[in-house]
Length: 199
Image: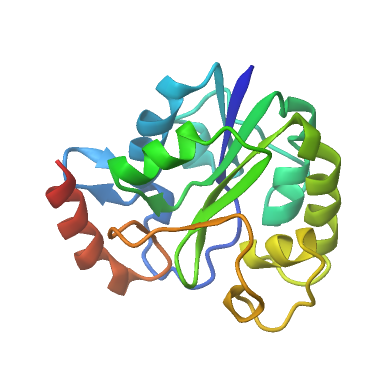
């Protein structure tokens, strides 16, 4: 079975808008997380959303609410019992191109990470990687609540800063098509233009 987990946890410390970044409106009468869910869900047998904010849970009534949902790594680890033959974890604040979605959903190897120079957007893994990935999530959570921490823990790297590019990128698909994530309000004009261009 193919399973997708979309994360909408974390504390959004850099996001200053009163509107939750996952619910930020985008062109086409859609939200950031709504768009991502619509892009990914047709490719999977089951799609789950991890959320703790009431306004997100209201949109996804079957959302998963882990005990530690405000800590990203721990909230992902709490979904381990849902992982299956093919599992994709996608960060719910990402705005991805159709081409990037295709790369993510078509991957069928043991494990692959997808992102750009400074961000990880998603990762895909098969059943053989469940235990190793769970261990990396647990170790990464002791370093920092950033995606690069689990990447580096997975490959046995030391955590030097928040990004992985200083240690080489193994099993990493570099995305350079305008796909990005929402971290700051200043990102929005560029995101809007990309979404309009992808239509």
